[in-house]
Image 1 (spheres, helix red, strand yellow):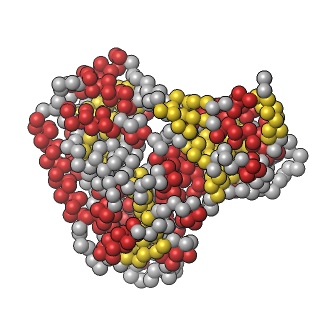
Image 2 (image 1 turned 90 degrees about the horizontal axis):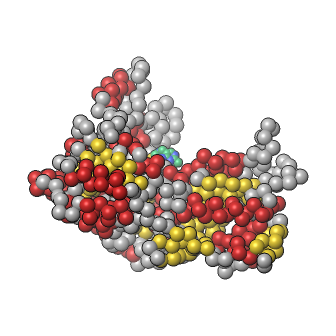
Length: 627
Ligand SMILES: Cc1ncc(C[n+]2csc(CCOP(=O)(O)OP(=O)(O)O)c2C)c(N)n1
Ligand SMILES: [Mg+2]
């Protein structure tokens, strides 16, 4: 048997470079490159390997380890999980900076390969710089923090362990039901240690992504349930996009007349003007979707993990005896809401249902109701896109301007603040990959970094990053990486002087926007009530963006924003358009609720009122136990 004498890091790199993924007979390279920030723990091991063989994997230097994992997640999502990036860090803070990114990727079920450096396996020089010693457990380092946020975790303490660990890592990364962050902790001495690796380990390896089907009995039962329902409602989640089920979903919805609501990850499953598209459902849902959801007797979930935003904290589906059918590749999700589990690939399963539902459709009256609700909703979006609010514009007008001035295949990216809810309701999605809001972890700071990953995965599309001032202040530095890689982003920085979403939430819960406004401390209020007393901080985020090298436009009203969006198209490098919006002009909620518990006892009257309203709303909560 041929053997190659390589360091563990060199062997890992060679292995990663030849992994392929295949679906529907089309095979592609799995790893699109490797992000990294070097320090001790990766500079000599993996760093040496990457430097020696740039032909194997492109190295992308990043500014912040959390951000690079977000970029990797954005990349994987854009590639429908058929591609991923590796991320290498030094030991200690470089490694733990990736933990938030890992949690974000795992919650969103997105493959990322994390390669944190680790302390010496030999332990000879212990404690090394940045080593956290655990007095009662010698083999524990900060990298144990990755365990609960990874779907596979391993530590390569001997060079030959790489062989089974790398194969196990690939299995999880490419398994559509299990995928998420995969962590291989790499002790720095072992990275540099040589071993005679069998040449077979470096042969091209194809990981097949199959399209498993639920069993016949379950399919028959589901078709029966659907055929006998009066008011079926379908909820499309991220799984419908990842499995490329959107065409069959559109056909099925058109023929059967079943109306469709979309989750954050599932938005784009249907084009916004498809006859069955009711848009967002749940806490940030449209009136059309939420009305139909409330009365549905059967809810068909496709690739959704039923988060509280989707179920409006289990108040969205209110019909007595409402039942669920769950199409999901992960049995874990298929079993939720006591639903009939159709554990399988979304596209294959919908195709199988399509045949069984041939010739069946909802009653004409139900189709008409959906059509009326849809056109009413379109009118509401038009109204909010063109509010002509002043003196500062409303955020909904910013959404309208970006939507109307972006192309049908362009991608909008967002993650946290008030913008995700507004986008969920208002964005008119025209392409299944045109809407990219990370709302599994809703990580402030994901926006620019995630947008960079989207652009890496599909440089042919314009990427519009909508980011609040709060998120921008948390993590804007990958603007620099976008310039380094000549990957253009159009960042719309929506400035409302602080955490307006949480301010509004706080006010609705009786706590006056406490601690959510950008202002000097001093008057004891730290809330929106203090606005008139205290001026804002002398912050200039547009200048900050210019300092990072972005091409900056300052828009003071919607017209200037539109002009800037048009001008931005002609700029080759990353653009930041700064626009100030009215902090208090939000998009309303449409017949929905989100469960955020209010203090049961308080001296404050607004809190007591909020608690009463909370108890009232909480009465609508359901368990969903009906099988
Ligand atoms: C890392 C992180 N920390 C805290 C939160 C909680 N949180 C959600 S939205 C938000 C405020 C976001 O502010 P900004 O980006 O300005 O958006 P706005 O609410 O003003 O629209 C906060 C603090 C979060 N989602 N992520
Ligand atoms: Mg803000």
